[in-house]
Length: 90
Length: 378
Image (cartoon, rainbow over all chains, first blue to last red; front, side, top):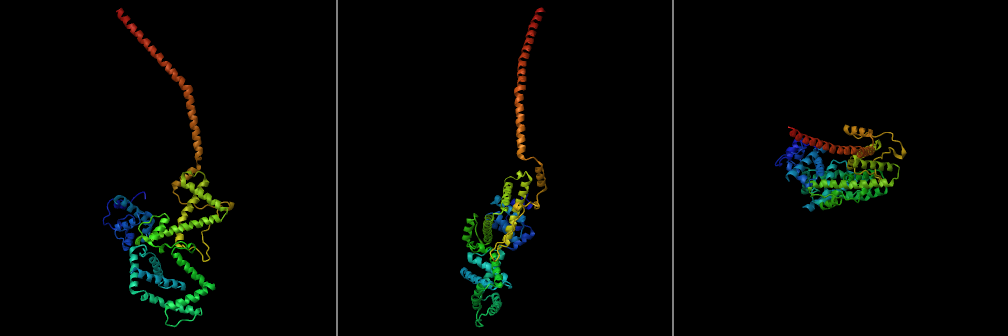
């Protein structure tokens, strides 16, 4: 978590607008497809879930692991990136 | 609408329960049935749809429900197909237990009633192997709900209403956010985990209090080691503490794994009510020598190197002591030197300076005196 990926910086650097769920850090093609199948097609839908959980990173990570089968690193990365986005733009 | 649905769900649940009593787990619908049962439970509890991980699955579920409610439960073809073999089984069961069969055209309910009356009563009296199997199945089903028979006073999170769930979470110090379809499942899980961890701790403490074996002391020492480790990892001077903290680390690293295991198999209870727990390590207990050590937890080579170095070094307090003594000595020497040697030199220098000044002044005087004399001579 000390270093952030390019994807993370890209996402946190600007409003998410209409970005797809795959723009989230930690969500690649496979996880993205799984999430889209479940209705989470846009990044802001995932953000909605994150906000519903009161920005609780731990619970969000659990949820993401449940829903998409992400591993801890991917889910943690996604949670971190959403958290930082919220800190910057909310 | 919601009330109707709920009632029907309740009926489905009742039927499900009866089926379970009869042991129809191997049927092709059993999985679906189990799920419906679960859904029904949650549904009766809360009036909101349960969120099984995700909206689409969930919508799928709800579509299923809608279909069933539209068709009405009894008219559902799936249920019809489901009832038939059930009747067959019931009949054969009843025959096997020497019960008079009702008229051929009677409904399944009648069979079930009869079955409950005769066979279940018998079971309470006679102790057959069949019963054990069925009880196990029951236990398993209860285990799926994450509820052990041992702690029956615990409310099943999935049966709580939204408000109750929120209150229960608050009781455990968790400020729950909005409990809606997509978050309810998570909060249920969290509450279940909290309840389980509470129960787990209580059980552990009880075991500790109950057993006054010599190895409890060992464990306390290990815990102390862990505490030390938590407070300052730099103070691992001698080998023993290092070992102990390693063990402690290992234990703590095993903790979540154990929890996961518990989570997977929440009903670790045998029909006889005995808790199945992990075997305690007997290493070093009752004065036995430690024959082998557990392999160290994986640490980075840098840490290993540091530990090696630390092992060879002199303990820190001795280092500090030596440092302080040396400093004191140096200061004393400095003070002595300042008093005895330097001050005479300084005073000597002070004495010298006025002397040289007066000498210069004398020289100037003589020069001054010389020049007028010379000018006079000229």
